[in-house]
Image (cartoon, rainbow, N blue to C red; front, side, top):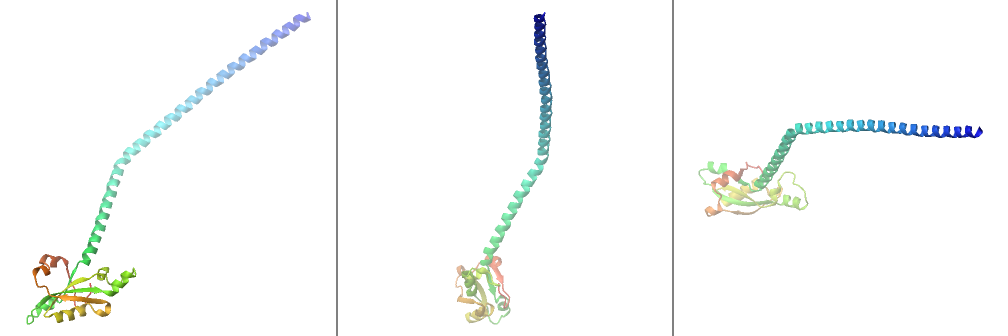
Length: 208
């Protein structure tokens, strides 16, 4: 009798254990299935959001493209203008050093009793040269005076031309007249076009 009760208890325990194991496996399978399902739904929603964001970015890029093209054209135009302005400034600096200064022109042609003659004076400023050597700027004269400048002088005689040049460019302010000549041929004189383009009329006592 006791043996039958023991056998029945053992069978009951075995059946109960198997039922527990089977139930636990089913529950784990259902849980894993549900978890995969929910995870799949989350990835799909994330993927959809990413795709929507990419589409919006592409639309925004296409909308901004014409504006970017216009801005690029404006930048290139500004660079061209900047280059042309710098080029003109450099050209003006070069042209300033090439100016043909003219003095005595008005008085010479008003004085009919003493015909005017044309002289060329070569003038340089020692103070500007010294400032350039010291890597400084002269207070009121341009750097071009560090090099010899040609000055056209209209006067009756070479003596008058020298006096006029020294009055306009006084030695006390550093000017030095190295030579005064009278052109003897057309090759030594400026053409009308050069005079019209390059000369700067200096009034009595004025300095350029």
